[in-house]
Image (tube, rainbow, N blue to C red; front, side):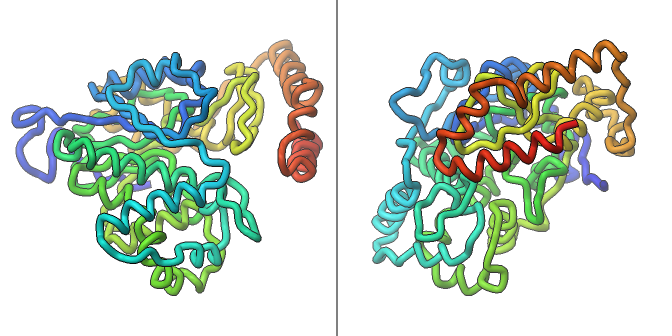
Length: 371
């Protein structure tokens, strides 16, 4: 992996520390789930490390827990209903956009001919899995709110992220992230661009967030561009959007130093269950993401480690993990068996959710491949 870094300078000009301390807005999208597990590392490794303000752009229902630490620490909070069908959310955004531009509303549902999880959460004759439409809408909710509250010009850098990351290393300091680039972690792209974390400057953040506008205002044009590949995941959809906006050549990467987690008691219907990891005492959604973050945590422990840049030549896939003792391995196996197989609510949850047959089949498949 090749990284373009500007250590201590922005765009090859004078050192940032001598001219201007960047103001940072850290924005959490969609939900504040897993906060019991993740907020301590988020606060220490992201919010405090970047000395940033916190903004939330969420969809919530009447059961939302306003006592969670993300809500309590946020300087800005913007919410919308947690729609049972996110076509209603898209209609809401379209009405506002068309009113602003004084144009008639086109039939954005024609875009549903492009299948895939980018439209997950929208009811249709051929409903798709996942929850991509929720993120697309929440990106618009964030952008709309930043504009309405005149915040786009108050911050130099915007960090767009999610609440359910456990951060094993400090967030890369802005001194090593060229302000002219759009920064993504180096993984979980699935044929496109990862949708989980992004760092953008004031100049680029609008185009990074404004994914929904092309769907709602130019659906026929967008469909004609995309119909040669009639199935897209959200990552591929974002890559196409970045291409339309001329952003692809601005994309740069930093090491993947965080992983998605959920607690043993959580039961999120739009969220993949992942695998229970006894070593950390919770579920890990993606094993590769987890192991990559743990590997980088052996060489990146502070801002100084980022600035020294020893990680540039580091290959996380070659990092050897220490093997646990036999008694510890037996303990881990018992814990995993309990949480993955015998826990009664696991089976009950798999059966009672919508789409229960498919969910239960996938649950059984995971059990057969458990090791």
